[in-house]
Length: 166
Image (cartoon, rainbow, N blue to C red; front, top):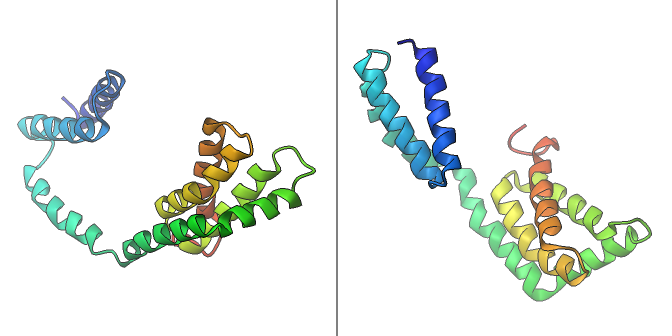
């Protein structure tokens, strides 16, 4: 058995279990552990590598950029509760109002700028969701379209130069 065959088999098993409806976290972790044991049996994988994963988890938890996530979520809640977000998006919607989807365009622009300034996609999506989702639903946008626009605006910030990714 080769490592390439084992990799393709692992991918196939992961996809099948995901399509069967198993939770993503359990599917990925379970297939990784099972195929690590299979790889160790065929001497294609060293189980000693698994002892390094707790160190990696603590390394990720100590990342200083993650400290900003709750603060940006708090900022989104404050902007939404104070009504500033509604007024900002309403003003930008009027700016682009002559175009079809003016509010959607303004959400994309505000979300991309916020994502570029924060550098954290998750915090941006949560903040934009708190700020703009009620405004968009009130304006008559469907929930699916609103959610898609918010998620797209959060990930757009990664390609704007001040982002952490670049």
